Image (cartoon, rainbow, N blue to C red; front, side):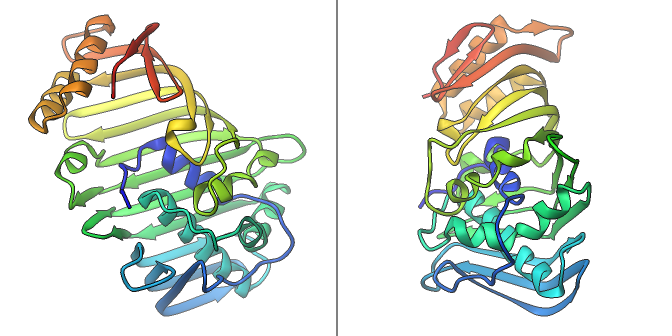
Length: 311
């Protein structure tokens, strides 16, 4: 099992999968994951689980998610529905963070558990899902956040769903290379067609489906680590695998040389060499800012029409 940096394609795949279609809310299947909380309060419009823990089945060593609290708010239909949505969203988040696909976490389960969200989004409702101090662990690797917040706003007819994602206080142990590259804070606002979301569930935390592609319009994207800051906008097609996803747009980065030195110090000579090339072909508005037109497809990053050897 490997843990990847929760780069935005992976996180987008997770949060997009939280809006889907189906019949009625459904409890978490024990063969998929087991969840519990120190205390739980739930109503038809909100559920909060404190001292929350969720673990993929089977076994005590399976990937797990802990959070001081998890809250879901919106028009869920019933108190039981809101609790089921809380569990299903946490399963998808954990699956994306640790790159875990559980065969028993079926698309039918997600479609049923999260149906109230899609029904509400189709009538213009809004939903918020937030995790306080979430920690995802697989083996000796652990990734943590101070907070992670997802906001979903619906429309009517063919209007897309508007999504915003904010995460802060990110850190990692058990992998020094990934820990040195992980963005500490990130924010994004994007939109997606509602009818395209259902199949992405199985590709994110259930059975992988590399042929699934969900179009996304990214209005704003920001990620920061120390003095390094990345900004961008564009479009993407998201799948259950970052390598199978594609994207294009305009990006800018502040203090790129600092990232290059970080990669060199971690022994990542090939990515460092690629970013040196990106720095050379980039547009420099001042001594610290570099910008590019970029494309990502087939696992290859192209910067200003020049493919970069990241592998």
